[in-house]
Amino acid sequence: MNIFHTTTYNLYNEHVKKDLVFSVDSDLHFSYMVKDKKLLLIANKIAKISPSYILMPGDLIDSTEVVRDLKEQKRLLNWLKDIATIAPVLISLGSHDYYGGKDNNWRYEFNQELFDEINNINNVTVLDNTSFIDNNVFITGITQSFKYYHNETKKEDKNLLITELQQNLPSNIPNDKLNILLIHSPVYMLDSDILKMVENYDLIVCGHMHNGCVLPIMYELWPSTRGLIAPNKDFFPLNERNTLLKKGDKVLVNGTLTMFQECSNLFQIANILYPIYNSVVKFTNNPEYNKEKLLVKRRYHV
Image (cartoon, rainbow, N blue to C red; front, side, top):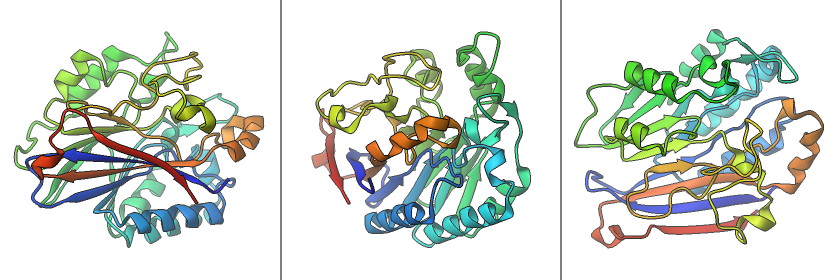
């Protein structure tokens, strides 16, 4: 399809010293089926945005299986080197980044060597329960554990998330910078208990939900936060998309760069029906943008 669906958010923040632009690019699910042409399209799109920072909230790879081939590893590393020449790249970990196995028979497997190589790329930082800070921003990446996704209930575990946030959220969040949290799954991030824990963050950036697999023709006609199906196979789940709509909202559930990944088997062919989703978040301290409703613009373009 080679078409992008870009959502632009214009946000106000009093701590921003200068206008900041973030390109949010989630769920690449890198594998052999993510061709060089697509990687180049994404890199060119990011370059046109000319962001201050590039945010990638998880699922950079589809599984550890797809990067065993050193040629495939090199393709991914070269692409990250390319986009890192545009702006600093901040990557948090998603569920697929530490999955081994095939056909949904997942096991925990983390390729430490690969992510060490990624972290050693100039201008790229992997945030695995760690934070990045500079003169403008404080950005934390929280990793939701394998057990969070895979447990006896076969549901994401809110109580475990609370424990993991208590253990891994930094205690020294600055009060004079723009504070951003990257965390892959948004399933409980709109829960009042969780929001209280992350109240010192100005924006919470998530991925994971793949827009609920809502077809493009339905996306604008059905302006809901619901999707058709969630990653855990629930139907018509809430908070799959369109979650950042009014002043006071903090959670951005970003669309996906690759809708149906390598592990989706026959569903892969449906990727031709979906665009490449990304978000552009612009922060300013201009009071004109301190309004009740956010200024949101969506558009398709090549």
